[in-house]
Length: 190
Image (cartoon, rainbow, N blue to C red; front, side):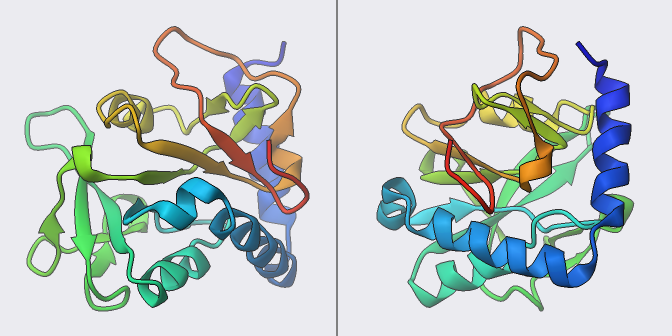
């Protein structure tokens, strides 16, 4: 099996080579599939992430949530005690309530957004580098989402979104890795 490092390099190279028009059209298709999943339709609160460097564009999902009265929650990477961890914050305005954070990725502004109880999150849209057919994910290596997903309520639906080229037969796993409930690409739902 390919190593985590090589897999991350391979996918990063592929993502970098995607043109903006392709990323946008695929992201719209992925959004269409996500918003029609029953757990998403029923959700009152959705935690999403702000895309970065040719990831699936998440603003389409975020806009849909606002338009349909869902509470929108974004992750803030907190490192006050030396350990990086995700803290969920609810935003009311996608433009005014966020600012560049770690690595330039948009995050909630503490002065505008409000802390959100992770137990109340109905759906989490999960980023990743690569995924497999068993709905396992390979993240960016910091363990942020694995730690976070292990702390949400058991009824929270975990949805990974990715481009089809990010799907592999298997990805390297560790004991602490949390599988997803759904994996959505521009071509299918797994």
